[in-house]
Length: 216
Image (cartoon, rainbow, N blue to C red):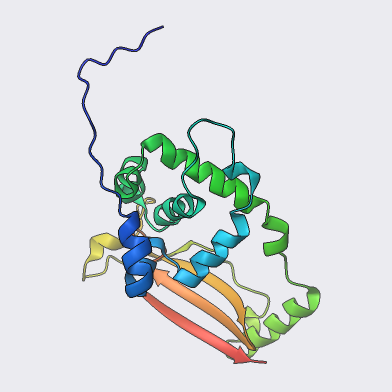
């Protein structure tokens, strides 16, 4: 079988990697985080956790791209949705081929999945009870054991908002807000972040945030 290219041509690409890793990382951390969704220190820590994984080494004649570049491609894609997260757009941003974007995603995900058991664990019964007591203090007894919502639950609005109403229209033909809930322990502070944002927006482009905290 032969492959015939009717109109051979060169696809010109200009990578943004030098701009991100040299200029933004050193001189403009805000734009570094805008591109990769994490701070430079967090990026370096993530890189340390996966760079020695055997998935990034092979015996091929053509070596892989640096692990830092592969991770940056994946982080950039994670921070976008819709057409902005397409393989072709990511390839143009990073200056690599579309197949390389797919390969980078597969390798990085394989490397991170190995860390699943050490990075993700369910809270103990004592931690659950402590959280329930806190929820009761900051809200009411009826919400002590939780409420009928999960991460990403659409909160249906009574009617179409009068200001930019179309952005609230979701794929289920409702006008709604998406609700995201995250819990984290930072130093000695329990932080519960409830986020409401447009259904069409990405996780990083929120409408507004509310933070409730309790000092232990």
